[in-house]
Image (cartoon, rainbow, N blue to C red; front, side, top):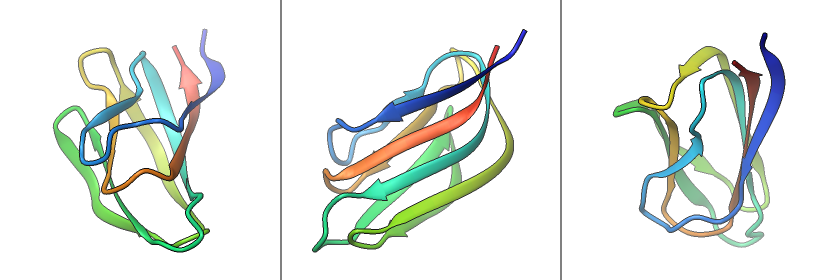
Length: 97
């Protein structure tokens, strides 16, 4: 049975791929919030080794929502993020399996 789930990440090392979702799930959205009110941030998202949508700019003090129909995540193919600087908060939502 699938369960609605949200995964969040607020601490990561800049310029390093960091897991956001590591369990079997179908991710349907990712929201990224830039808590830095002065500086834009650059972010990348990948599933396994495949980059999704290329680099995205998150303006200072703003948020970005990535709508995804269903991104199948597994232990072998994790959803990962990478940002050029600290200050982004990530929330992924979907169905855990």
